[in-house]
Structures are given as C-alpha cells and as structure tokens.
Amino acid sequence: ADLPLILGIETSCDETGVGLVRGCELLSDEVASSVDQHARFGGVVPEVASRAHLEAMTPTVHRALDKAGATLADVDALAVTAGPGLAGALLVGVSAAKAYAMALGKPLYGVNHLVGHVAVDQLEHGPLPKPAIALLVSGGHTSLLLVRDLATDVQQLGDTVDDAAGEAYDKVARLLGLPYPGGPPIDKAAREGNPRGIRFPRGKWGDGTYDFSFSGLKTAVARWVEDSTREGRDLPVADIAAGFQEAVVDVLTRKAVDACLEHGVEHLVISGGVAANSRLRALAEERCGDAGITLRVPRPRLCTDNGAMIAALGAEVVAADLPPSTLKLATDTSLP
Ligand code: KG4
Ligand code: ZN
Image 1 (cartoon, helix red, strand yellow):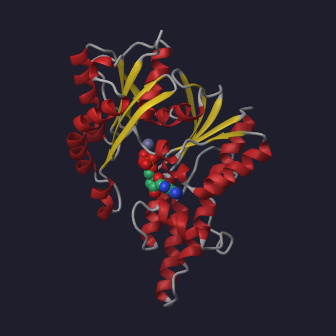
Image 2 (cartoon, helix red, strand yellow; image 1 turned 30 degrees about the horizontal axis):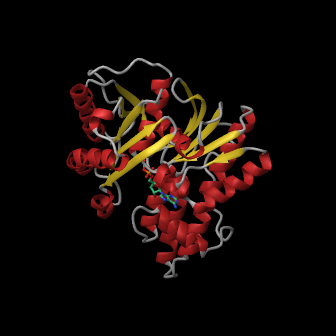
C-alpha cells in the first residue's frame, strides 16, 4: 500500500513552513519568512512573527498542496511543531493544525522541532542509519543528540549554556557592522581573512562535556572592536570574522566527532541554519574523514526551518504507530 501523505506545519520562529511528504519522499516544501520584518531589530520580534504566521498560514498550506498536486482531502495525517520555540508563534501553527485535523477528521501529531531538523535529512539522503549523532546549529539551538530512533529514542548529549551558535554569528555581525542575519556575511568576510590571525577563545573546549558556550567569544570580539575604535585603528573585519568563525566551528566539529567516537557511532548529521556555513562543512568533512565517520548534511534549504522537516518526522511517528495527539495538544516553548 501507498505510504501515508503527511502534511507538516512549522511556526516555531520566524518561518511559516508547510511541507508534504510520503515516507522519505519530499513532495513540496513552502516557506513564508518574516525575516525582513525583523532585520532592523537585529533579531526576531516574537509579536511580529506571530502576526506574520497568522497571515501566511492559509496561503502557505494551499501553495504546498498545489505544488504537490494534492488537495486537503488527500492528506492522511498532520504533524505540527509543538515546541520548542516562541510561545505565540507555536500557538498559531498548533491552532491551525488542530483546525485542519478536526475539519478533515485526520490524526494530528505534535512533534519536537529539534528532532525535525534531524529527520529532514532522510528526505535528501534516505533512511537515517541507527544510531546516529546529530549536531543542530541554528539561531535558536546548539545541541548534540544521540539518535537511536527518530520517533522514540533521541537523547540530548549537550546543549549551549548561553548563546546559540547562530545567535553568536548574528551578534558578532552586528558588532562588525554587517547585516542581519549575520551568518552569511561573516561566512563571506571570513574568506578574505586569516583564520589564524586572531585567536579567539574556544568556550568549554576539552571540559569533558558535550555542552557549548559562545558568550565569551562574543565578548572577546566586542573587546577587539572597542580597542580598535578607541585607538582609532581600522577594524580588521575579515580577520575578526575568520578568527571568530574558526573558534566556533573548531569546537562544534571537535565535540561532534568526539561524541561519535565515544558512542561508537559512524554517522553524523549536521543540520540547522548554521549548517549552511562553508567552513563548518569543510572542517566537519575533514575531521569525519580522519575519524572514519560518514557525514550527512542536508542542502541549506532543508537545514533552515521548514514544514517538510516536521512532515518527515511525522512520517516516522506514524510509521512507529505512536498514538496521535488529541485536540488538547499544548505547545511547549522549552520542549527538551
Ligand atoms: O535554522 P535557522 O534558519 O533558524 C533558526 O534559528 O531556527 O537558522 C538561522 C541562523 C541565523 O543565526 C543565521 O545567522 C545562521 O543560521 N546562518 C549561518 C549561515 N547561514 C545562516 N551561520 C553561519 N554561516 C552561514 N553561512
Ligand atoms: Zn530550527
């Protein structure tokens, strides 16, 4: 029999995402972003994001259905991000998903956004070998996960103790006078700089945990900017960007590879917006190659928040025969 058609809805941050999948097959992936409305604030404004989700929800659902050549009546089950994320933003997606589920008489599954970032890799590279280690790096998260089963067994090995990796990129870009979101312009500027010119601190390096810290690094960049300004020197933007980026990706890749080796895991997935980073990809490739680990990085479009990742995880949950959520499904802003 045909695998069920899953419609996934994602609204945890500033992306209204709706995707349709069947098993590991991606049928459509539509995203409406409010990023432009947040740019002048240098970060996501929750209330602005919620209103944008409300406006984008219905048209995005219909675009996703059209692109997949499907109608609402073809949908077999719905999956929606229940958390973690912004409270008001999550509520829009969960409310919409409940309404569709009730109107269509189809089951609804509330799923974890972070695990969705891992599940999406299956749409590009096929079924994820078990177990796998996942490194999630975005504006909101920096987590290392041990994934034994996407639907039923995901263990968090470590997390950031302060800023997320993408947040550090965004804050440092602001210090350097580069636009928001800061990842792409720093990635670009770093190509012109010397990654070993300025050595920035590696937070929580070699501390025996899988946790991360980026606030000390951000402070170190701030001090550089202050000193240069006070002394009337030109800011070496490219060298700071390159040194900062090297410090971030050095710790990320080292801890991810260590986690694979400690747990005897041969597959590493890197996902989230920061997975688009060219230096992170290159260094991860190099270190995984040295350690005999197979690296899986979904294309950038799938790494950033989208609805297909939620549908991909929904497909796993349906396949695992887990019970659907009820209409009492609650959002959880800090879902672990
Ligand atoms: O996954 P995402 O789109 O949204 C969430 O935060 O969930 O990630 C956005 C983050 C931003 O902080 C952005 O600066 C960062 O991903 N980013 C990058 C790059 N492209 C996007 N960071 C480093 N290098 C990049 N090329
Ligand atoms: Zn995300």
